[in-house]
Structure formats: structure tokens, C-alpha cells
Amino acid sequence: METPVRTLIVDDEPYSRDELKHLLATYPSIKIVGEAESGESAILCAIQLQPDVVFLDVEMPKMNGMKAAKALLELKKAPLVVFATAYPQFAAEAFRYDAIDYLLKPYDEEQLQETINRIKRKFTTLIEPDNGKAPGKLALEVDGEIIYLEPKEILYILKDDKVTKLITKSREFETKTPLKELEIRLLNFGFFRIHKSFLVNLEYVNKLSPWFNGAYQLEIQGRKELLSVSRNYVKALRLRLEI
Image (tube, rainbow, N blue to C red; front, side):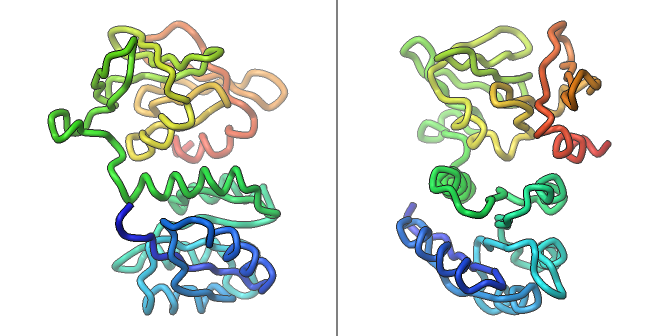
């Protein structure tokens, strides 16, 4: 990426800000342009510094991270928001504010790497156009050849042992491209992770039904099989489906 992503860190704890600064300093694609210790100061800094991304703590006195995120999204140049907190129960609510990711403290370096990948994808080409010959299509290597799929044709994607299967309206494709990579590349096309092995196109969701032990099953338009929804994803999925 030619231009570093301008990044603002917001946390009321100096130690947490220092830790995140140290971790982000290892990424050349990230440029830290400022820090803030409260929701109120985060908004002022965002107006002055025009960051591309804000790493935002949730639990802060007075204006918490959720309220700050709502205000940030109303700015003329709204930054991407990455929530960072020690409390996993806020994850579902984060989707209401179009958060690009949700990091748990203490920070896990592998999770942070995934977050940076998501950010980089946002500021580069999400869908590879092959020198402009196939704009808006997903470039995919299948059996040694590069094929191009319209994201809207994909019903769901699953991880099956060492291969990834794409189920489309007309046929199935197998590729070695990891499910996680496809999730990032399809971030802006209405796809949602419902399980460690499933990524679905929300446009084709017909029914969400309780199963057992807090898990659900998902019915996809035109398909007989039911997909498992892990209980960890249920709340966020219901929010995305506006249930």
C-alpha cells in the first residue's frame, strides 16, 4: 500500500494506548497520527487529524466508545472504527456502528494481524480486476486456472478439510484459497461469517431457526441443506438481519 493508513488510538488507560502503539508500530502500512483519552477528545481529534481508522476503547467514563463511534460516523469524513475492549459482550452491539473489527484485550498478535489485513483491504482493491478486464468480480484460482465470479452469484462458502467450496446458484467450485481470505475480500458484498466453517451471502438467507444449546440453523434460498450457526455468532447475525 503506497499511503499509510492514518490511525487514531482512543483509550482512557495510558498503558493500553502504549501497548497498542507498540504493536501497531510493526506495521509499515499504519501511521499513528494521534491519541485520545476519552470519547469527547476522540471526536475533536478526528475532526482535526482526519484519521482513516480509529482504534476505540469501549469502556470509558462519560462518553463511552459506542457513543463516540456513533458521533464519529456522523462526521463528514467518517473513519473506520475498530473497537478494542476487555469485554466480549459488546461484540454484537459493535455491528450497529459498522465496526470493521472487534479486538479483545489483552491483544492477540494473530488477531491484530487479521484486523490490519481487513483495514488494508478497505484501502486497496477488495475485488481483483485482473488489470481491469473483470471489474467487480472475485478472482479465484480453480484447478490451476483463474476464474471470475460475481459475488452476487455466490450463495455461501464453506471450509471442507483442506479445500474451500463456493456454492453458487448454478454450480460448486473448489479452491485452496482460505475461507478467512475470502471473508476479507468479500467484506463489502453482504457476506457474513456464521461459523468457523461457513460464510454466507445474507441476501439469500430464508430462515434462521433455533437448534440446540444456543446454536441456530440457517436455511439458504434454493438449497435443501441447513447450515450451522455457532452461538457465538447468533447475536451479531440477528443484528445484521435486523431481527
